[in-house]
Image (cartoon, rainbow, N blue to C red; front, side):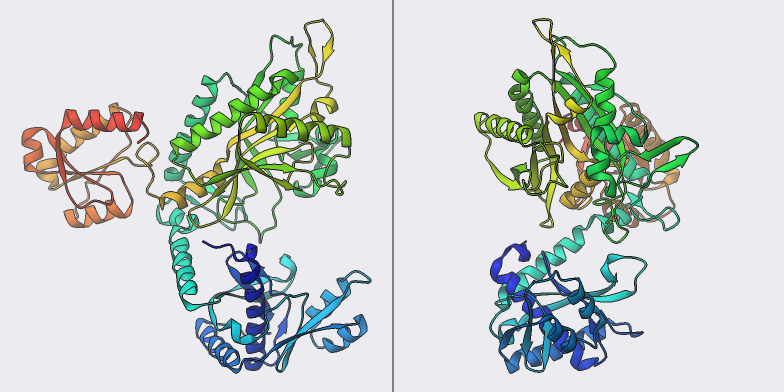
Amino acid sequence: MIDIKEDERLSKLNHSCAHLLAQAVKHLYPNAKFWVGPVISEGFYYDIDLGDYTLTEDDLEKISKEMKKLAKDGKRIYREEISRDEALEKFKDDPYKIDIINELPDGEVISCYTQGDFTDLCRGPHVDSVKECKNFKLLKVSGAYYKGDSKNKVLQRIYGVCFDDKENLEKHLELLEEAKERDHRKIGKELDLFMGHELVGPGLQMWLPNGATVRIELENYIRDKELKLGYNHVYTPYLASTELYKVSGHWDHYKDDMFPAMKMDNEELVLRPMNCPHHMLIYKHKLHSYRDLPIRIGELAHDFRYEASGAVCGLERVRQMCQNDAHLFVRPDQIKEEVSNVVNLILDVYKDFNIKDYAFRLSLRDKNNTEKYFDDDEMWEKAESELRKVLTELGIDFYEAEGEAAFYGPKLDVQIKSAIGHDVTLSTCQLDFLLPERFDLTYVDENGQKARPVVIHRAILGTFDRFMAFLIEETKGAFPLWLAPVQVNIIPVNNEYHLEYAKKIMKKLLDKNIRVKLDDRDEKLSYKMRESQASKIPYSLIIGDKEKENETVSYRLFGHKETENLSLKDFEKKIVNQIKERK
């Protein structure tokens, strides 16, 4: 799916179409007030105050009709630069525009765009004529807090998209429809994978039994891989003293993304946003020789970050997450080998999950942003050059992105294209010379002298929450057999005659640690089969007279119409092997 925001022509076209939308709304609702109408990856939106009136789908049709009429009229779009006083006078009846004008820094050029009888405050740029905006579609309307703050008024947000021609518009709409069907929130609800509740709070999801089963399998999968590679797993507290984050530097650089500190007696505690400070102390609690390194500390760790309530989204963006986290304490001469091992582990995992559409990004600091990044030019130059050198020597294709580093060091991010076209950071590998200094970490080198280790921060699956969202959308909820919450659904044709044999099959499969469901409800076979397919269970077994007499099973794979027959023994062997091989 095209990222409209990243396409210069489409970005200009969609921004112009947002103004066309606002003009049509103003014609139909003369008292409308307008805040902002930016371009987004999927098209555009405009936030509008219509007083007490709430838009419906029928209203969107009326607005579309008016937009088409205006586009056909084909008025040219003109840009005009005006003074701050002129702008305040021109938009004096719209408090939202006045607020924008007042927040503009002194000396900034103020411009507006006019098309026919409508003028809007805007930086631009725009297309030459509204006629170019004729191939559009209004998608939906929803509520949005003014400035994203839940304390403010709810405005009405109208979403739309625009293309140069009808054919590309229709293709894009088809992809949007596909994305809607793949939305992990929709599928998560249908398959009982996870849920949220207003009494718990936004961004705090609860994993239901089906989703928890998938997550347990994912945790076991990555833990087993790490143990084979020499990782040692730990558990650390969800809380820590604020002093810990002051030592690490997170308090200065990350405090706004943390939950507020809890003050009790003489203590000040905070929910941890990340695990690296804890792991630094685990390394430090005993003396290490150069022969001990590398030391690889892993944790499936719960972290907490304060996301605005309007920004949270299903499992993709949450306030409590579980990270597949690890910190590698290495000698400088081990950096290349350990980074290489991390990259190989990433590629091995992607092969297992059939992830093919990805790119490596070297994320660097913005030298001018001393607030976001720790201010030590020498450290940054050393870390960035080291990581760049290692990636080059390993023959890894990568591109560079300034301003995307962690506050303490550069990182290798793996950017994944999800099934619905989102660009998602999945795995990371970060090189850190700073935290070993701040925590005074050492080891005894071959000369008996104290030396400073280097820390490699890495996450392979990222957070289980975001990886689960990615996986749901990638598979449409039809998980591979080894991950499926229920792997086999046994359906006796007639409970009176076939239930006993069905229970025997169930026991045999359970003894092999296969996740089995027995559907012994008094319902028609066709109904139970439809439900089994709707639940996306990989194997549905149909047990009737023939199967009972011959000690066989008849099975239907999810998404297939044909039925296969095997002996019970061969079926057991088949499914055990498929699970073992993660097919």
